Image (tube, rainbow, N blue to C red; front, side, top):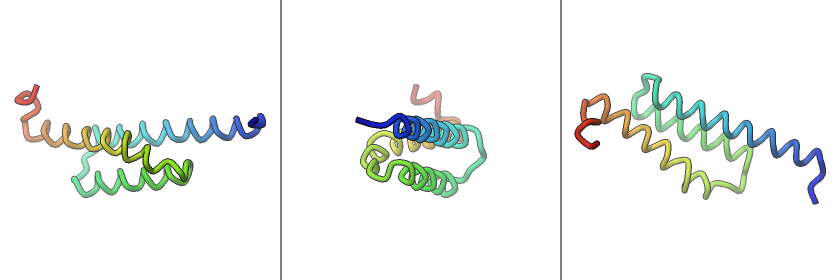
Length: 87
């Protein structure tokens, strides 16, 4: 059974995870980034998340990377004026 301290540390890591994901999502949506800069941001976020949860690379690849890439692709389509064409 986890100690109170371990539970608190896990909660802190989860808050940091949420913050990292939210900040990355925000930057991908609203910052003026080249595709290379955006991909580098995604990779830096992956490294930071893995420093918090070393054994969760599979979860990142399954859940977060596709989410980030979808946002990146939506932004690219919006910039080209093609977002309305897909919807």
